[in-house]
Every structure is written in C-alpha cells, then in structure tokens.
Image (cartoon, rainbow, N blue to C red):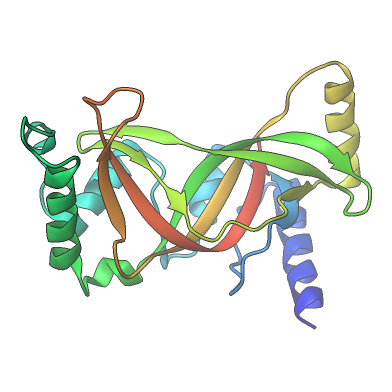
Length: 223
C-alpha cells in the first residue's frame, strides 16, 4: 500500500512537470535513495515546496536562518590555535557553547530543504535507473562556508527517468557527455550538536559551518 501511494505521488509530479505546473513535493517518513528523475525549472523547485518547508538554497537564505538560530557569526580569528593551546581547544569551546545556547530552539523543529550536487553513472537495468554519484554543495556566506551534512544517506542512490527522458539521456551519454543533476534533500537538523563550526582543510583560514541533517526525502532534479 505504501509503495502504491508513493508511485501515485511520483506520477502526479511527472504529469505536472510535463504540462508546466508547479509540483507540490511529497515527503516520506523514511528516506529512500531510489526516486524518479524529474525535469523542472529552477523557479518551480522553490514554489513546489510545502509552505512548512524552509528552503536553504542561497547565501541570503542561509544567513537569515543562521541569524535566527545562532544570533551572530563567530569571530573566526579568535578560534585558531595559539602557541601552547591544546589542538582544536578553542574551536571545541565555541562548539560546546553554541550547542548549549541553541538547545531547544524552535528552528530545530523546522523542516528544511537544501541541495547537493550529483551526476549520473552506470544504468541499472533492474531498477531502470541511473546510479548517482553525489557530493556536497559549498555555499559562501557572511558567516563562512556552509556545507550540509546528511546523517542518514541511503545506501542505494538511483535516479529513475521516464522512458522519454531515458532516451534523451542515453543519447547524450553515448556522445560522451556527463549528465549533472541536482539532489534535493529535506529533513530536520539533529537535536543535539546540530551545527559544527570548523576550519577548511584546504584553507585553514576559512571558517566552515556544517549543519547535520536527518533527511526524510531525496528527490533528483534535472533542468
């Protein structure tokens, strides 16, 4: 019964996308990495989200969310190790203080949506979909670089296109083209240690914020 209901929702999304309507995204209680690959415009992604889901796609949206949740950005230069410090002691202290301050905050119950990136890999005949290679999107903000961290990624990530779209994709792949897609994750920040403040491994002078999200839905989108 649950699978039939999920299939009906997906078919409705495909019909609306084909006729130019804005879909209303559906969200399962348990995440699955096998989902339809849907063609949508960038504008319809945001308008298709339920009103209860907050999009965190742009730098300005992230900055507003962090301001409500955290107050003010950290002064990153204060949290670099100093001679005589224990390794990571200062940034550890910042994280513990921020965790305590946001404990019980109402935004921890806010349903959020964010993007990761991906591209299509080998076609899986059994599931009639492409296996998906996924990776995070790094967004530069006034607070630092934001990199979302899903805590419960499904083992199998497969994007299932319609028969019409499959022919188009296979033709492009046969020409040696790599098909990039957008992955839409939704969920909630985990209740404890929801955010981690750290420094970039590539550039230790850059501050990073890692929101840890328990996801409840995965959608694959292609323009």
